[in-house]
Image 1: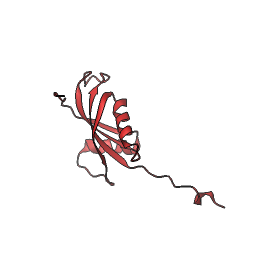
Image 2: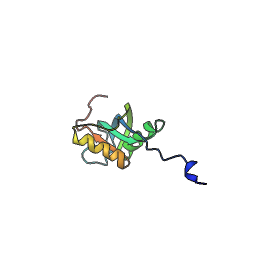
Image 3: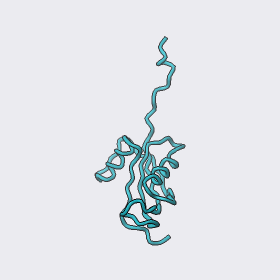
Image 4: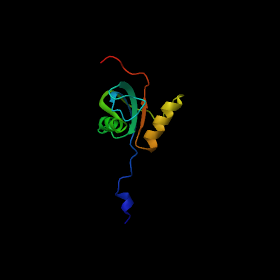
Length: 109
């Protein structure tokens, strides 16, 4: 008897993109503590874990009070002419995730 017939094949999780707003914790000199920025994060996660995975990634990159504004399942294959977005996607596909911080701070709350 072959056990392979009874074991579920490994599933490759989809990649999600989340648009967030967060406050810098001061760990990165480019973003003073408390400064608010828009952040795009991409992660590989299940549907039920996508929101938490994005918030955890953003927090691990030095952002507090992260608020997820939009969440989107990315199509496969991913197409973009923007090398920054392509790198972010590749990091989500091959590493723990990718983050793009928009350089202009958000002035109003």
